[in-house]
Length: 178
Image (cartoon, rainbow, N blue to C red; front, side):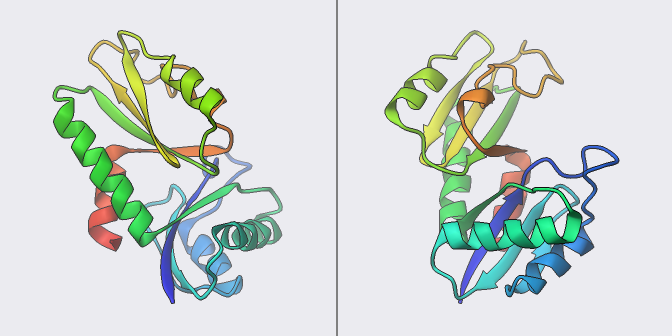
């Protein structure tokens, strides 16, 4: 059995896309995964599986979520080892960039191609920069960026299917589940 973490996109944002964490656990286990656990009500779930293919894991979860909720829930999965590496890279970036106002991590479904990498990295400004590490894209935001703006560098549209978490959440999940 391998432990995975999955991140659900665009849930609990309004009255029509509600997916409480207890229902997420139930749906994950109904899809055949074991030991499902959630962290806060924003679509973070840990589970065990015998499946080895990330794509098959994501497909099984997305089918289960659609059947349970009646709407699509894009899902991005990482093995515990992959996620631990994302958290470690985030900590190293924080150490290398003291004084950040915010640090968000965008989890992408597929690695970016060269053109996407160039475009995303080209969005750097006085407000911050994007640092790409495989399927994790770190938004390093400097003091003075527009607080409260979800995508101040306007790079998310270049990432494909994605969901983001604050680095504080990434750190908490790594401490809890890795």
